[in-house]
Image 1 (spheres, helix red, strand yellow):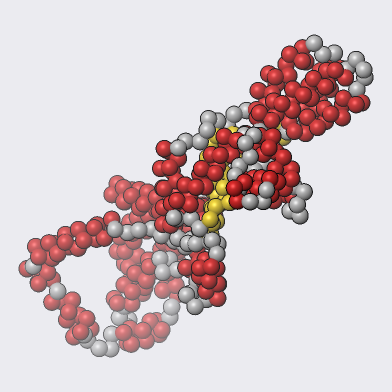
Image 2 (tube, rainbow, N blue to C red; image 1 turned 180 degrees about the horizontal axis):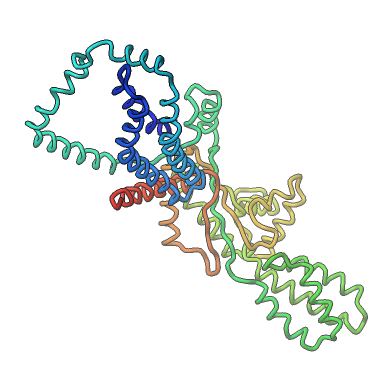
Length: 422
C-alpha cells in the first residue's frame, strides 16, 4: 500500500503546492504530469526491477510476493498518470480555491521547515569532505556489522515468552530428551532385483514354460515401482510348492530356497555389520553432547536380545547374525505394538532411520549437529552401498532459512545490477 500511493502523492503534492485561486487547473495538471513523468517513470521501473528480482529466490511465496508487488507498482504508475489528473481536473473551482486558501493562507517561506531547508546547502557544501568521510566510516562499520550477522530462527520463539505454548516447551525440554525432531535416514543404493534375478537364472533355465510364465507373473504382482517385495515372493513360492503339479514342484522348491537365501542377503538392515554401523552413529550423536536422545533399530534389537537371553545388562547387545536379528524383530512383533518396528526400518529392510530428539529448535543448534555429524561421516563413511540423508522439521527449517537467505542475497545483487544497467 505505501509503495502504491507514492507516485500519486507526488502529483497531488505538486498540484496543491502550485495551485492558486483562479489558476487554470487543466494547464496546471498537464504541467504536473509532464514535469513528473520522467522521474516517476524511472522510480517505478527501478522499484519494479527490485521486486521482480525476488523471482530468483528458491522460495515460491517470495517469488509470488515479488511479482505481485512489482506489477502492482506498474499498475499504480499507470493509474497515477491517468486517473489522478482526471480526478484533479474534475474538482470544482470552488473546492480548489478553498484548498489553496487553506494551504497558502500563511507565508510558507517563513515556516521553520523552509528556514532549515534554505540554510542546509551552504554548510553541506562547505563540509562536503567531512560528510563523505563520515559516510565511508558508516559504510565500513555497516559491512563489518553485516559480516557478524547470524541467521537463526525457531518457530517457537514467534510466541511471547509468557505464552502457554512456549512455557510448556521450556518445561518439556527441561525434563525430557527433547521435543524437536530430526532424522538421519540410510538407504540401500544397490538394486537387489538384479542380484536375486541372477541367482534364480540357472533354476529357470531348465524349468518348464508354465513355471517361467507363472514366475514372471508372480514377480510382476509384487513389484512396486522399481523395487520388488522379495519377501512376499518367497512366501508365495511356499504356497506354490503345495499346489503345483508333481513335475513342477521341484522347481518351485528350488526357487523358493534360492529367493529366500538371496533375499536375506539383500536385506541390508538385517546384516550385523550394517546394524552395528547404526549403533556407531548413535554413539557419535551421544558423544557430541548436542542431542538429547537418539532412537533406532539397534535399540529395539538389544532390548529383545537381552530379554530372550537372561534379562541382565550383560546381554544388552546386538544379536550376532542376520537370522538372530530377524528373530528379534519377529519376537517384538508379538508385543502390543507390532508395527512400531516399521518406524525404524522398512519392511524390505532396505532403509533405516535414526530418530534424533533435540532440546532446542534453533537453527544454529541444528546446524551444529549437522556440521558435527557430517565431519564424523567423512571420517566414518557408511558401508558400501548405503547412502545417508537428513530430514525432519527442525532440519527442514534450517534448509528453508538457508535457501531464503541465499535467494534474498541473489535477488538483492541482481536488482543492483539491473538498476545500474538502467
